Length: 86
Image (cartoon, rainbow, N blue to C red):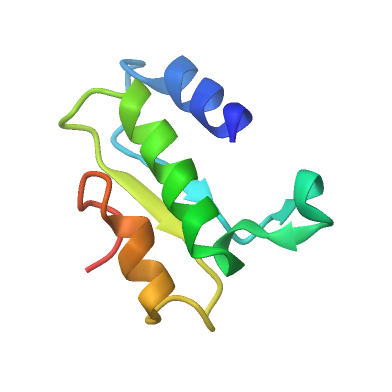
């Protein structure tokens, strides 16, 4: 999670950056290689951590796998700032 937030912090305010996409489809080495997007609480925590370090007006998107894109998991990931998913 820290890597997502640190990368977002570094990109925040840079010219040409119009949004941040958190790739929650990638494996989470700290969690036995499971996908971040497969765990609603972890997805929420990642997006919340990113949202916390970027300007409030900068959109933050959660990139999810097709099997989670319209599930309750996606709605949970979108809560911190409501810019990730419908």
